[in-house]
Image (cartoon, rainbow, N blue to C red; front, side, top):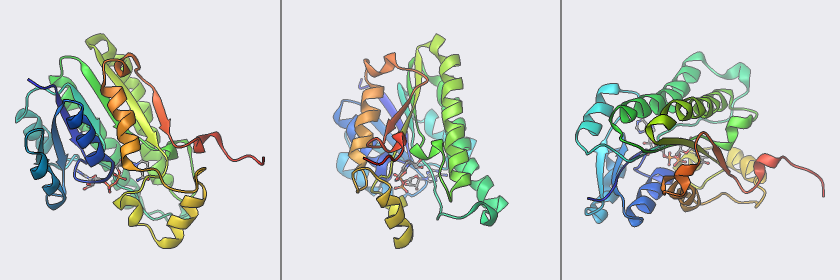
Length: 237
Ligand SMILES: NC(=O)c1ccc[n+]([C@@H]2O[C@H](COP(=O)([O-])OP(=O)(O)OC[C@H]3O[C@@H](n4cnc5c(N)ncnc54)[C@H](O)[C@@H]3O)[C@@H](O)[C@H]2O)c1
């Protein structure tokens, strides 16, 4: 039997690239997402990828999906939301809570339910370079910093059960999330990229594929910044 992987947010963007990469590397993948229409891509990969509709903030949805598959060897928490850049004083409490509910709470619920079933393997949480800080996104930054903290806490607990837990923190990646930003915001963010352009989802999927591999599982509790060096800051040269 092929090893089993669950990828949330697998309908598009980084999650879809991760699902395709893992399938190509020999995994049997369940791509789970709340966007049923966008999950249609899996029909062209029916041998290795199946789609499942899920809301990662709903514990019943998560158990339904996990109970319908063999215990996963790898879980990739990729489902997430972002928002237009807003100064702190304009961020509504509801928007803040929703960001934490999906990005942090969803990662927590999926990891918890998966860990109850896993017999070893790897959990990989997609954070963001933004966890280090950034203007105009206090709620997003908070949600991703919490994912990093939770990754380290889970890594400590789960290492005794042969489960590695790591985070991948991407810089700006060309996906629908970015396409949804206003042109002005996209331009401002792109200017901050060392390469002057956004990364491709496949690049992030490559890092996830490594962490899922036997060699990659020697890492645990780490944050892999896949950001072209943006996290090093900007210096005159
Ligand atoms: N694109 C970037 O620049 C970037 C940078 C750093 C981190 N990330 C992170 O990468 C992850 C994937 O983002 P992306 O850029 O591929 O965005 P995307 O919008 O293309 O994909 C996100 C997917 O998550 C799904 N999703 C959202 N809420 C969900 C929920 N409650 N339940 C189930 N599915 C849900 C969406 O339907 C969508 O298919 C996110 O966690 C995001 O924060 C993205």
